Image (cartoon, rainbow, N blue to C red; front, top):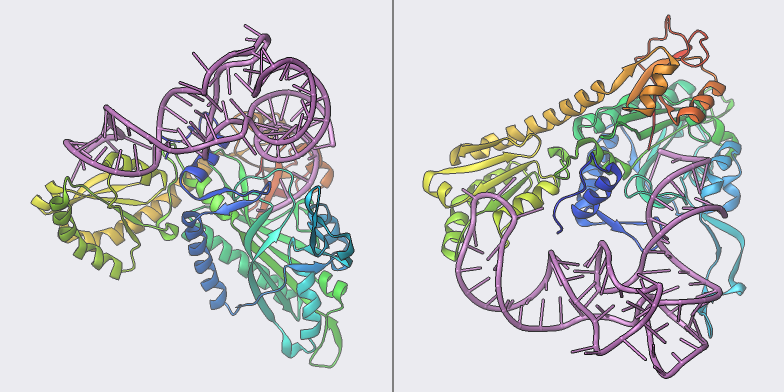
Length: 489
RNA sequence: CGGGGUGUAGCGCAGUCCGGUUAGCGCGCGUCGUUCGGGACGACGAGGUCGGAGGUUCAAAUCCUCUCACCCCGACCA
């Protein structure tokens, strides 16, 4: 592994790419814009997945799987939806290749499909085509299905984890008898996303509503969790959509009510993706590399044994193994690095990989009944008695988890500005950056004008807004909403 | 799709302007030895269709033509 990463202050984008590749999270795939998630990165995704999967199951959702391929015509059923996704769809037009003397291998023109098939950019359309078959009566509702899947959006500019041509996510698709229930579901999921982000990823988020121009194509309303990265730009980390009756209309999904009338079904959809991994990297990372919150760290503790020869190695092993067994019994994820090589090298490597706690065990410790524990979140190093390790370490991991959220929140708050003049607004966006809270008159014209002039967009209309007495930052009209502007990923 | 750039060992690069021994360097990799509490060192070694095709020439990584790929910057996006 090459030494170090590009410092954040020098080039944040280079820092990000360095961390992702050097910490062994992901690599570039052979097709432009594709990503190979390497084992260490996938372990993070697995933990995120397990966590959220548990949350949705506790709230009555079930998993299923719908096909990757969708008839092209389905996409066009919902007008806004097609407009939103048509430009980035991969299309399957043929079903086989054949050998060619000159070019080696070519698409067999004989195999052209009657109806072309698209690779799902999201699954609303296939799912609602099926829901039409499955829903007849109010007794079939609510239908609360989720799937863990890959989707393809042919983006022009890609970045590992943040925006790749193919990515992994979960997409929930629910059907309800009433508008109220659908809204309740949308907000329930948003709350689960907030918990996932804050309680597990230690990533503080604003919750709220997207503006019309930023909402999902085909939704009535899009709610989101929005967070601040280390370069003060915003990351949309999860979205929960109230789809109203739009997809029910498009696919003719109706149900019979208790009093025997026919009504259109209400829908929601919601998703979080591998982008969350990128969010964790950019929320917590520093110039030494990754810093992982314990709850989603593949390894919560890395053990660096220090020894000279086989005899010393055995002494350390005999000394520490029972302690590690005890910790593992408590559910602590531990990695032991018994490789040959200098401890200093290993320290740096595991710091790069963001392991929350490092346990150093060497001859001095064996002699004195100690071990050295170093925290990744704040660099603290302390000597602990061997007997204290197995009860102290889980507690310290909790402390680290809390501290990382606190740090991230403090950073976000320190870089959030409340402004009342457009000059100040522009100065902040062009200069130090960060989130800007201000009044907005609620018009798309204002939103677009600000975007054109500054590149900042409305990230969220937060639930905790207080527009009373505010005027629009741009038009000077009375503010309809207090919103958060920022440059976004 | 516009503008800019780069393709030479696993990675990062030099060499190309001005053609000429066996194509180099750093990191990494392998073996052996000494090291080992904050990125150790030595010795030996493996590894190349110089992005691809065609051309000029006694001779091409180097010159010419064509082509492919990727990266960066702009218009779209979880």
